[in-house]
Length: 395
Image (cartoon, rainbow, N blue to C red; front, side, top):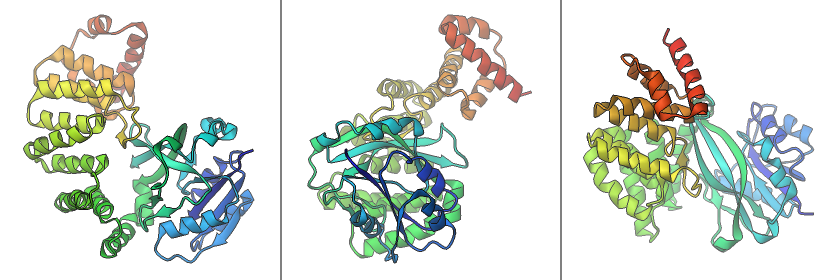
């Protein structure tokens, strides 16, 4: 029987560690906890899970700490998680059965990142992430934003399981409590000084500035990231371009953004987030017909290409929301209402879409006719419930 070892590094995680470890009970055969200096009840709580807890003197490298834990593991496979993550309980069977493990050396899982003020199913990003790997010498690299070194692993030896891992570390409360921006910025600056993966360091610095709405600094570093990628003979990753055009949109530099994003789409034509951003740019340039086509392309593409970091909604309810806004600008009242209803069918609780529907219905007296004309029976019933909810919210 294939044996799985869970390897984690922790420090002062008493608020979240039990949620994480409860999610893997009955799934893993061994738990290795590398504690880097907890002063709360983290270690005490971990002891309740028959884990092997080892002390580690922090040296400023997340990769070194993770590799230290791997050395203690006796399993055939390593599953790695952070304390602010958990496995979806409904997906445990995929890991318990361990089918087809012999075909691969690395297995990607579905990493779902929550962001914003609270846990909201509409506010997530998702990507296929290397969380399972064979315990045969594969190690982590990079002091900050560490990743597995897969240089010697062929693509046909990398598999995928539809197992969801929920990550809560990007929620505002967690970021503020752990003072992640300050810690991250210092480590990333040192990474640049030491010449370690400079292109990724600049990217993550740009991301920190973007999150703080310091867009000029963010743009400077994302451009340095792209330049560094190219100077090292490496194609800039898709998420780097996504960040760049998100920054330019936030700065209102729409004409500049449109010129650049066309080039990025030649590199990554199947990345729905880039197509979505192009639609947003066209919307703000008042090219509404072209924008509508972009958003329709997004809906056709969908959000299932997990090789990319995908924002939830760009191939569904967010695209329909923008289609509605475009029709509103074009004075197409019926199309605007129908489009925002399609958005709400996909995400009934999306507040922005609820508010837009409410404003569009202020002078609309023909809702029953619209429902009958454009939607089937089940859709009409669902929309009637949504309309009732929207009306209650607006008094």
